[in-house]
Length: 231
Image (cartoon, rainbow, N blue to C red):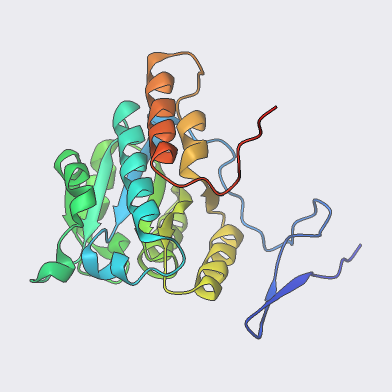
């Protein structure tokens, strides 16, 4: 049985998409891990510096900073290791943004020298030392540093998830293309807010309570886009 591949149009480009396939995914779709576990997870924050983050146009800047900090806070609450990856170089553009300075204090810092940080032995050794086999990735940019790490790690046999609401890039078309490439390679596309529940595993344990408090604090500081319903 064959099915016509659906498409969507964006800024003159035509992209294949899985929407509208009535639950049937294209044969090229990768086999992603179906369940993420906190005891096997490792959070990786990519290029959280003024220069790379300053180029993001797919997400409001303060919301992105808050999402990245919240993802790191959830990792801390659930005893999940955090690797903070940055690019080398002098000047303010290569400094970790002030909003994430406290995150840097609690994370292991890795300087990447290759386009894909997976090609840096120091990074691979850092991952190996944690004993974790599931990478949860956020940061800048979705179609470059984030995607290249996720794709290389998948090729190496690790499970990978990208927190789509804790990363960004220069344009929506670039981000959509990256999401489809990642999903077709078996990388799970998740939200950091959903991770707060999934990784905690329980709803009443102290770790879960702490993770949900981080989610509430994040949204308490953001403007509402949908009015609250009142009787």
